[in-house]
Length: 518
Image (cartoon, rainbow, N blue to C red; front, side, top):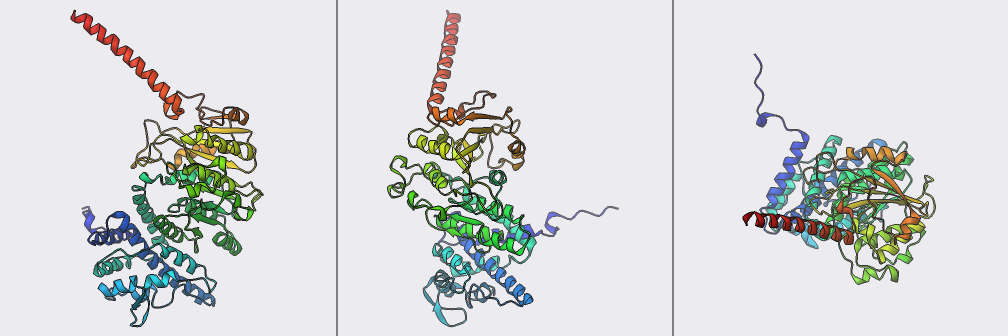
């Protein structure tokens, strides 16, 4: 006789389910606190709490490893500011006492002594002991505030997070997936600021196509929550063979910049969670320095990024750019910065410095300042490939058609290869629930190494593009007309022409109907 199946309620929970349940419970508790206005308040709250729990678990693990190896260990945080000192005991400090310890510059600490409050201590850390993790922590908490008003609810949240363990590699991997789901929630609120967080499939393709090598320095000047840097770090990690390789990976491989406090915090946590011990993320605006003051020491080997587009920069930022290159359009300012920050000399791997950049369609056909920037790109760089992404890749955040520019310092450009990514058969667009998949880039990656013209790929001489005022918006000569990729003036003309034909047909139908009634 077959045994009855267990009900869903009686099935043992997986690690993912347990961690997911803990995170959900913590966020449900936060919803009761009147100091938090919505998901964008709850997300950073949960993130800084998880950050401190993760840091303490990591410190405990490192201390044990150092003990086994007979090495001295210097903790990043001293008592009583470690998680284990004030948060681990579920019956520990709570209520107003907990809020005072976290928020105030001076407070009675959980061990009964008087001293700096938690955030005041964290913000004042320095790397005087040679451990730059302390600088990372100080920079992270410089932009963090505790907005919860109830110390009792905060204690409940802390107790939930205490149930998440970061010392298991399986749980780290699972938490990484759950953390990605948290980052996706942030993307839902980003579309009105010109920031469209890049689908993981697009990020992975850009990294695979650019192929960073160990020893090369990778930069994302608009890092957001760290998607490009995490993928690049994972790509480089697979190349580590020795202790010296690991040192290069940890200390001289990843660099980022993110000016907004919430994405900056998420970026730090994301990188730490994926194994980068001391992320080097600049919390300032990457455009804040004069373009002409960027020298070879400031340049890098690989740039992977999706800079904000559709936004506008203030005059003070625009003044950092040459007179004939000034513009309020953020995407064009970032494109100039990216060009400037690529090393002139070959990388340690003997390859030219290179970039992969997401740009809106307007960058391809834009004139004026935009055309002058593209002229420099064609004449001084090797713009070897433009991948035209299909409709809806950034849905639901924007319907603007997007492209991927790949260029390097091996220029000037002789020919520009175009590759048009098709939508899957039967699909008209992508959606939030059915995004683009990495497997769809397979044919493009196969073509990448052995290029030939086909139904999806074609090339255009640079001389032809320069003669056309640097209009890079070239449609597939073997494809049916797609008006979404036409320049604005052609798009308008096409719509007017079609509407005129519709009006003519409607007029004929009206005439026939009138004749029939007569």
